[in-house]
Amino acid sequence: MAARPESRLDGDAAPSFTDLNNLAAAEVGGDVVFATDDWFAISVNMLKSDPPEWREGVFTASGKWMDGWETRRKRIAHHDWCIIKLGIPGIIKGLDIDTSYFTGNYPPRASIQAACLPEDVEFPEYAKELGSCATLDQMEEIKTIKSEEWTEILPRSNLKPGYKDTCHNYFPVNSETRFTHLRLNLFPDGGMARLKVYGYALKDWSKISPDKMIDLAAMLNGGIALSWSNKHYGHPRNLVAPGRAPNMGSGWETARRLDRPPILQYRKDGCIDFQGHEWAILKLGHPGIVKKIEVDTNHFKGNFPDSCIIEGCAMDAETENVFSSSPEHVNLPWKMLLPSSKLAPHKRHLYTSEVQDCGIITHVKVTIYPDGGISRLRLYGYPRTWNGHQKNF
Image 1: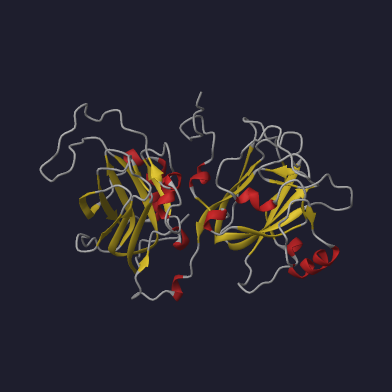
Image 2 (image 1 turned 135 degrees about the vertical axis):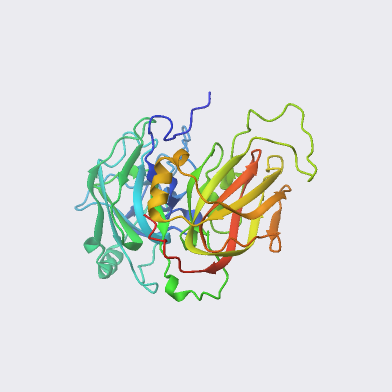
């Protein structure tokens, strides 16, 4: 029997910040650069995007196989901790410490500190091997980083066990500082399945020439998914993720619409005649003028949309706040950016001459007919200054 996915529509199970980008995910470059102990399970496991897994009766030379990071039962002074390099440096708005399946071996408490470090910072050599721990020399070397003095973004907080109804430990973060690294402290030891760090990239746009074409919607450039009609199989934030999607699960995919016609027919333009549709609204990392669009249906072979349109508008922070809380009460001045375009399965669609001039825009609305999946959306253009644009949050 399938379980319903967590949704704000289902009793506010997950806070709104979980719809932002996961800055620490391994698939966007997140990594663990130091850990005091990797005895039962290696720390880098907790940065995986896949749901935690339980393997009944499976053991390693170190003990029970666990999907996450788990240290040994500490029998010396101090506590366990690790340092995480964010795959996407940026502003952190929330945390999810997921203790799934760690029911009798989760840490009672945890805290997180953060810092913005230079690119050339060096860490001790780190083995990332099951059954290992940091040596005395490595512990001395790591002291030069002074991570114990970093900014505390999560004070020491109680955690809950990894049962289905208690495994997600959500913590909002109130900070506008750009961070590159985190120090995760366990008090005193134990294990967790996943750590997700939700926020958005903060790019230094002063270093980007206004004459350089750039993907204005890219996650790495600060793009986020703001709103959507449906995310049953895949979140629309995946549209702006780095690289091409490794599989179908790494894109935006909706459920099949129940109002699709029982017998399908073509329109005069060659597209299937659908009244129903799904949509997603993305906020660009910077206002700009879009000149080239890529719609990638990579891996979507039997479930790609028949067609799509893309619209753009300029929205100030006040309008965005009202729209985010009550979208049905806000009429946005959408302009056509990409007219109705037929899509094909498992293909990169590139549009240049078809792209219409919308002027400077801050947001785009992607509408697919009637439903289905898109793996990536690239909006190439030139960054521009817009008086109505304010910081992301």
